[in-house]
Image (tube, rainbow, N blue to C red; front, side):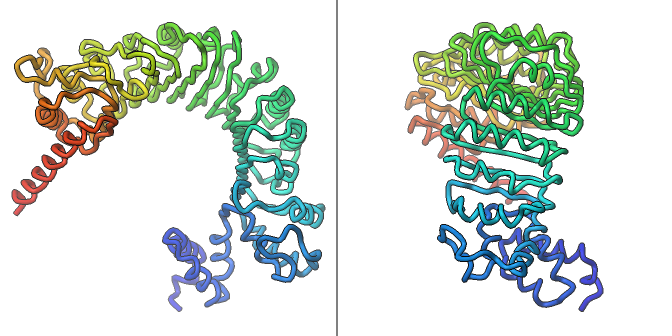
Length: 491
């Protein structure tokens, strides 16, 4: 045996390569071929599991087999120890209750045998995808004092009292929780109170990630916006609620859903948010109003304009935003404003606005306005698209209303703004979402040629109007010819 294979870390690296290549049988054979390989290989094989079923299969077949509603007999001490040989190696467990459901009877036996010590003593992260609630009472079985990440993705029919009771045990079972993510729990006052209590009793010195998509009680709101170690926060604000001035010096990612008014933006005024890089706002309000103006006024009292890299705002309503309120956020790399055109075009974008945004935000890589461009002949012309190509050289994804009929040469505006020179580099745009933008048949070729001129790297067009298929094909041919020319020039 080569002396390098006596180093456990090298064996672990080899095993990880085999697992990444889905060569599980080869990894298992590696564990069997040399006694010194067994522990490092098993550690890697069992480190992350997507289901509980593989662990149950380590019991003899005369005790339990897949499909059994319960154990045929209780495992002996020796059989239990054999199973724990693998359980103690698990660091990450994701149990999905949608498929391969483990019955409550099986879990009851595991709970009985593990009454004196955690079933997974070294488990660091636990995720449950639950739809019916049958596993909720058994969640404490999976946790240990070393568990730092806890996630539930559920349906809306979980029993409120049972779920609340389970949540109450988390701070005791996992005293050093760092990440708590509760997705799609039922909108139940009992659960709202339980989640708020969970926040108040969790170790606030270790908590770095808190995700709960329903409102918190006032006492919990006073705490959540002042946690010094918090790095990621998602929360929901219900009704005309105010929040305290935020003191979150380490917060990087903030996501808020609200359903009425935006008085809560007062919490941004004078806030300590020195590292905030991403803000996502989900509006469920009937009227969004001039949200961008209110956000800008609050943000300008903080360091947000210097740190914000990603801004997302979505509403299912029709909305005519004033994009100029975004001009102070010059460091943005991703700007996404989603609104509906279902009852009529909501786009207010034009060439002048796009030119100003492109000048102000040269670092943009993603720019998306609207859920999908509609059939209304509105939006920017080649002049605005050229400004994006000129100023935003890193732009790779674009979704915007533009007028395909304006690509007619006799009426086409100048490509390059008068105060600029032709860039030495070309824009990196590869993905363009055109949705249902109308395109006259006679303009198909001109649109394809113009787009490839403005965006030489363009490769993919996402469309909902079949006439754009001809444009996509023409651009594909152009790309093939360009590749062929480069290959010939290299000879």
